[in-house]
Length: 315
Image: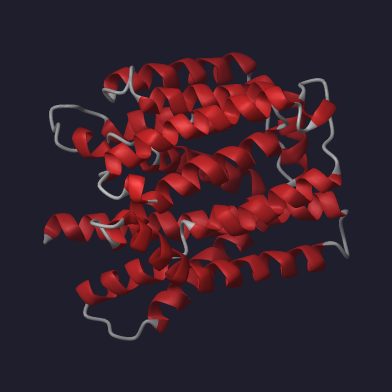
């Protein structure tokens, strides 16, 4: 850990991109997941679904487990002292998303995929601090959306059958042209040029995402990306914010502060599976909890980030 002590956030994320790429190559070449990783496979065994669920419910959601601290910062700006106001607001938004998904599943998933693409493009952008200092670049949010859309478009293009099977389990009837999906992949790659990342580590991340989706089932590919690139990338930034001088101390402080909400979220996810398993198969229950659960957390998480940024610009 001392090796990373004097690295700034950019250097840490650049190192992380290289490590994630090596991990991608290793997993893809090791045959760890056997015949279930290849495009012709239409189903994924329940054991892999359980593993994916466990990783997402712990490592995956942990990068949002400091939202309560960010919420406390936001409440101070509005001169609200009671932290319960944040928790209630967060739960109301999350519950509303679940309810809206049950009533309008197709519309909700489209909104979720659009917001998630922007979120992935923005949060995974290791050169964002440089980009924000370049006001002459127009359509910043649009290019970030295109960049992050690779996470969504890659499985749709590489494994359309398996991806639409997941949509069907989520009660979503969606038809997307393969040509349109291919165009989004190309535009995602082109966006790196406008974000001044074409030869940077962000492009290495995109190559890793593409490679994962060529080799693995969409659920496995998404889990590896979400947990070991997106979540860890965001967590590294949080560790650095907690202690800019010593990453080791920031790491332990992050674990301490993130543990309570991570455990609570994981328990809620598990309870969700137990409840849904009375009506659906284990596999279907896991998929519903993973994606509807993540959607319910993503909306308030992004809203919180937006409100914080908006108020920081005003101050």
